[in-house]
Image (cartoon, rainbow, N blue to C red; front, side):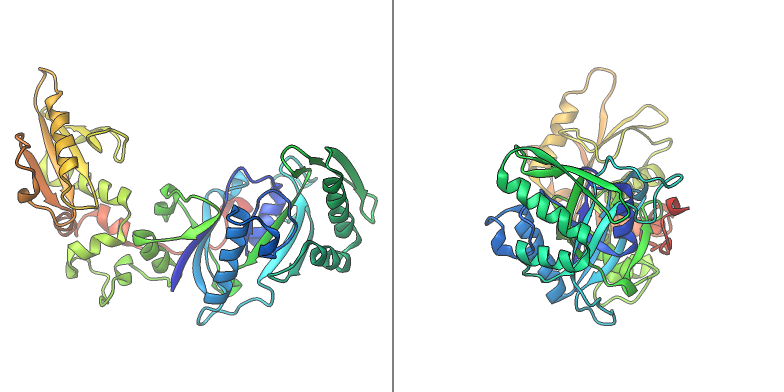
Length: 403
């Protein structure tokens, strides 16, 4: 089964109530400039982000995928994420409508709720649309949905056609005024937002906390949607299938016991940051007394990932890579040692996939300790650190911020 992510960033201009509404309705959002108002790919310019996102959403519905969905538009939803399936997935019940169109208030709007709005205030309209809906189709469907939805869409299209920045106010049936403006320079609306949404399979959808599943909190993703690969794929599958242990995602393995697997294979269930942490914990527990960081794991040093000191003042520099024995990385680590001052030497450590002492280039004259990260995995099988990384916590039920 393919694994994907859908991300709504903190820069998306929707109100807090609309973000909570998307969470409750189990929706993955695609947000971009409001125009064109369509789901028909031919309405979008070739290669545009909006076109590519909608194209991928259609593929997900056709092929069936498992997805991690995170909505970072309100701060109160940044503590976790949804894991769900989309489309035709065995055992999941797909909703009747795959695509939805939403009209909502923009980010500056505040409702009259006491405290944080979790009830969906600010959503003006939400209706199903086909995957090839033209602007005319969506306006027609909006007319069938509500008078206010049609008024907003028609006014927005008229303002855009006129081409100048201008504002408009429409009234709801109970007299509430909704004011928005067209920004001609950016070709977008202010005050209201339009969103295309793909519907998640509700029976499969669960909320997970970053506190109990920290891997995803440090995993950046570019764009609105895309592939989840490597360790991320394994961790996503482990959560979706409610495994007890991430080792269960390894092919031809049926175990939760880290001592029963080949470390060289098992290391693939961990993300890069987790491997770096595991290697530094190995140094602390197996090689040095009083080993402490002075620069954090995964830093931006050119030649080393980690700097540390030991109880007797020994300096330690570490390079960790998932790529095996790369000559350039060995040489960078050696150059780091060459720049040391007179206060003492530095111990150099290189951790990589399937590496040993023979991988050190002949022109590197300083001593570099080499360890395979598969061997490190096997050395750490009884550690709290590794077992915490391998366990799959239970989903949280609902965001704690819902009260």
